[in-house]
Length: 301
Image 1: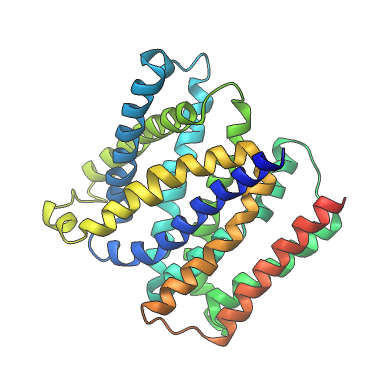
Image 2: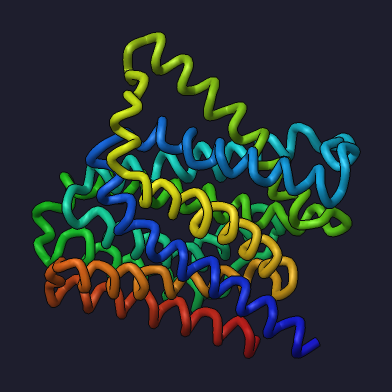
């Protein structure tokens, strides 16, 4: 049991470390290509890689949905269209501080998981959990506004998009528990493939109505290493490690590791020259402390 918990924790840690680096990397990506078509490039590549691995290790029969087509499609759409579109659009709209705002909003996911469990599993959170949510919310507001509450209205829209995107990922993470007999490779591959169906349909509609334009090849050739990072470490490896880790230690425990996303992002941003304000640091600490306190309370209860 201990070895299983340790393995699950290491897998979740691997995923969130790669995801922590994802937001600073995306800050450069978003200066060359929109978040929508980049989602197609990134997770389209991930879907191809996972499909090849699934054929090799489990055969063609593993692509059968066994009556779960709708739920797999909804979960895949939530993660690979909802999360990617909303989070990275919000990061882009937030400007230079977008990577910081996005990474901190990811740390709110443990509390979002409590709300999802309330609605989905009928597990009503305790009063203490609500207090932790309030403290975390205050922390997020401090990071987003840098202490200047007058800009809350203008900063609120990007933060709200990121928050909804984070909720989409929590829903996807919770869904892995509904397929206990499936391998993590199979769950990851099928949800990614079906999620890409939604991404392609949305892009077709947006492009034909001229809301988006088809990217030029030169836009991608300017960010080769960033694209590779987003596909392999922050895509294939992180996705597989996350799903497997959550199965081993449960989503409630696994999602706690999202606390490390802003820490990783903060370190990378600091190394690349971003200057953090006092309110950003205080806000990040409030979010992390609230989430840790809530998790410890749940364990004791």
